[in-house]
Length: 432
Image (cartoon, rainbow, N blue to C red; front, top):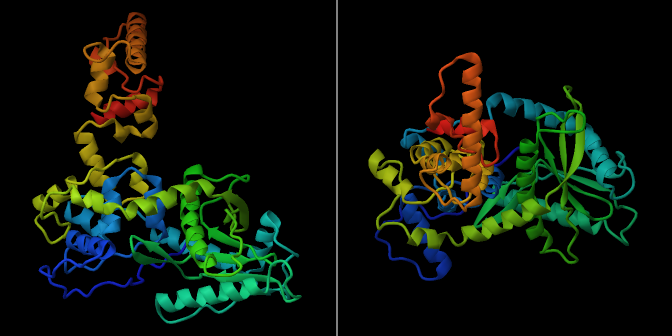
């Protein structure tokens, strides 16, 4: 649940002049280019696990990839554009989550270790005698990262096949991990990492949303899985430096309040799919140079610029808006407004966009449904026209029975009629 948002990453000082000659080398040149986009006097914003997980939630958005790769503060950017966002965790949810996490980790993490053993195994049942919680305190994120790596190495040496009788459970409470993101380290702080007696490492993600009758909100579970996948990737980078390399579970343990109580309930979550997506996104961040090269000369995302100039800079980078962005991206309100102004069907959701095939605008879908545009041999167009015909007939029958005036035909063209869902038609009307 927790992050380390205020950790500073190694960066050039703010006194670097804009006229400094571009450095040699591909990596250095990319960092120089991203600094120019951010503004030469603006320090980069540190990426955390939530930001990296949000990249995996919308992998096709060049705008987010470039802004995050350049370390642009998207919250400040949204405010400068006049579209401030409330994306993020509320103070109430933050306090509730901290209270629940403290309960789960009480008594040396006894309950947490018991849940890990119950769901994932790993050795003998944990007790106070065979469990340890090492001290991970150190100065700065770099120091904490090194201390975490040392604790993981020591725990792994005492565990695994052929280990001594000292092998037991090790709970790392709020360890600090580092992950290379576009050539710079991002410091990440998972809720917990458990090293089992068999030597396996397990990421534990503690959330405050409830698990009712063994099930939780799928969207929240998905977000937690994407975030945990980032931690697994960071752990893999630590494991690669050890010999032999320990095993890292691709099942993370999600711990939530049980039903409507404050008691913990847990379930393993397979994050292999999220790992694959996140790996691709991190690789894509290293190619943001291609996105930056397509921008007009002089494009800068400095929030001190006039609003009109800043808007042109943001609009120069293609975006792929989806309703899910509202919970994950600070620029979501700005992108939603632009998508609605362009009558883009992506504003109605990915499922609607997928059903409509090559029809990308609300106007185009309405025209196809009414028969004034579109190829009749296109299955999507044919489905829209049939749905429009059926709806028109149904409304005409209702008028005959109730004596009510007919609804204008243009208003009855259910834009999302490819799937016949009434809610999609309502979404089109709202988009217009």
